[in-house]
Image 1 (cartoon, rainbow, N blue to C red):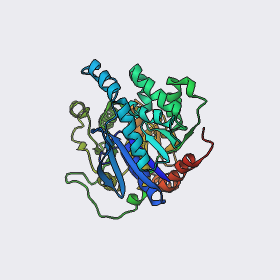
Image 2 (image 1 turned 90 degrees about the vertical axis):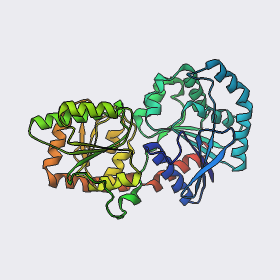
Image 3 (image 1 turned 60 degrees about the vertical axis):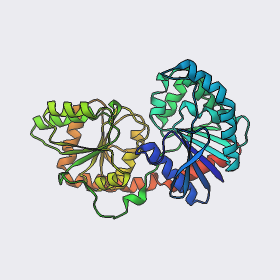
Image 4 (image 1 turned 180 degrees about the vertical axis):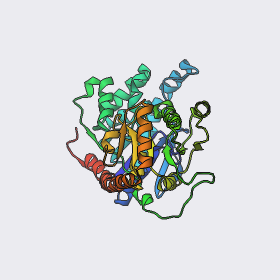
Length: 386
């Protein structure tokens, strides 16, 4: 089968969605299916920009009739270029004999595929990952209409967690009767078992807790700082390493200094995926204090490395983290609850090892990309998806 995966970001970008796209594409290729990735970017014609383990990655500009700078010009350019863009995209799909399109993280520019789906026979799956559903209600009316058109034209709406589907159907209640299903993301399990030798930056303490993610308000790193402050007041110090970058960095550094825990926090910035795995293997346990999530792949990755996990009881996290079996769930925006959980796992070495062993078995079984790719293929090959 010839499959096209569409994503907003090039696969060289570090992030959960790009990791999922890359792993899915490689697994489909491994199963003998011709797989191509298309990312939104520059250029009126699809152009090859790189190759990911044998999967070609193309880039193409998909214009919108909206702009923060000049709305009239953007609208005029959109309608002038619309027929040409549709034709070039149609020709690209035809030349690659595409039989199925999987849109990961559906943003408004993907609506072009909704138009072409009405004219073509290939299957169209639309997959929600996280912020694409969380922030859908904040988008402009034009963007929501374009995405609504895409979803109405699709053969199946997929989400990595039940909570994301509910948020999509809350914004678009008329789509509740649309075919939908849940397919989780997987983890790069081969990296978890790979012994490449340590690749941990200098200056990292021997005993540390790891967290990773984009430094934005939704990820709750400020709550983690508050939890460390509470622990410090109780005489319980804990070193935390954070892999990731984002607009909240300067604010988090200031908050940590004011809380008196800046020496316990080690911000590493954006790190290659392999480096994050090395950090996971070397940490005591993993923590994710998010206020909202989809089904965070980083938890599955930490568990695949045999680590217990502390995370907030929000959205799809309880689907992946079993309280008391693979880690601990804490209330969101609750520094006290988080501080207690951090102290508990820090002090009980035997229990956290037990949790980590159970977590690894669960991750290897549940988040195997081979099984997940089969679920996508089943939806793409099904004759009665609609």
